[in-house]
Image 1 (cartoon, rainbow, N blue to C red):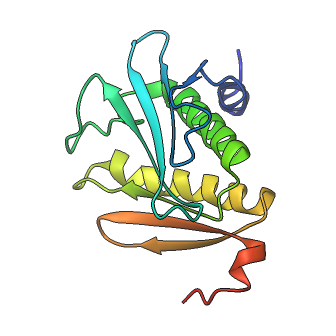
Image 2 (cartoon, one colour):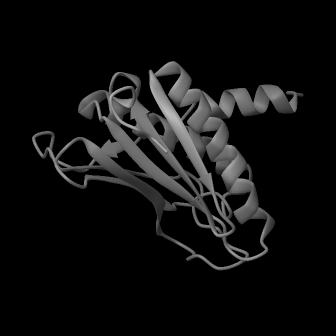
Length: 166
């Protein structure tokens, strides 16, 4: 029998197959999607260059299937054990987005819905991903934690020195 650690490691190393849905020449948008194997839930990753200055807003969400509520958190709340593969897939899409666009600034948020444990658990998982990403990809990271959401801001280190980040 596999240990829990082995199971998690394997799940994070086996993202779902996904496809980029935006055109490669589109310099303002980048999107991708995937469908889970068993539950056939479709997830979507979207990003947009807000001001044409490599300043990207990123979001990822459940596209088809159960919708958000206090007990149903969409991206991972409905997934159960499949949540690790879903997050691994979102991570793979995020890394490809960065590889293709080399953004100067990236922002995404972890919403905290109601008193649901799933909503509150999302933020620490995203924080761990954000810290690892920033460290391994030469970005500075600022995390703004509020009662309803946690916002993650990444700045290329070469640019962060030029700008005042209060």
